[in-house]
Amino acid sequence: MVNRRLLHRAAALAALCALAAGAAAAQATPEARAKAAPVFAALDKIAAEARRPAPARPALADAAAAPGSRRLTFSEAELNAYAACRVESEGGPYVKSLEIKLLGGDRIEGRVRVDLGRPQASGLVPQKQDLLFAGRFETREGQIRLTMDKLYLGAQELSPSFIDVVIAAASRLQGVPAMSLGDWYDLPDGVLRLETRPGQVDVVY
Image (cartoon, rainbow, N blue to C red; front, side):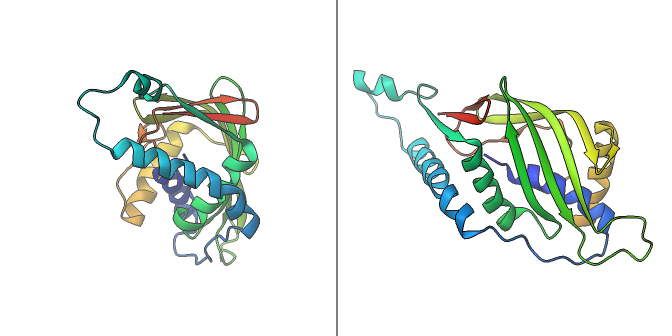
């Protein structure tokens, strides 16, 4: 559910600040891995079902399993454990953690913790800082898009349009395709959309 390219955007911002700074990779705790295991297992099962060929004549009982008719609910704690594991494997060297708060109406708030590794010689960029955001997401036909309402680096409010420029520059430094905050991204295979309630997310498949 935490898209790889979403993590790359956070990493891109950190990379532009860091340039050549070195940092160790994030480490998910054993508790986070245990709590995230059911989420990974559920997404693997959904993906496997999505790859199965559809029967030529589906039985009436299969109507209950039609795409979009089923959902799984995960808690905010499970989602954050899953995010910790994804950050460990895909967040890059600068992104240390991603914490998400689930609100109603497909709205979220979050914190990306950045560690640039060694102190910067200029002293202008703090070694450790938080990227805070609030926004809402849209999902459709297996894709998701995030609209940022508020974005802060530490105490400094940032313009989403400025961040798009920063991400484009950092993407070039990292050698990854240019991205935008408003891009659509693929959800995990078989997942059609997400819906949030306070403290919970529904995965519709």
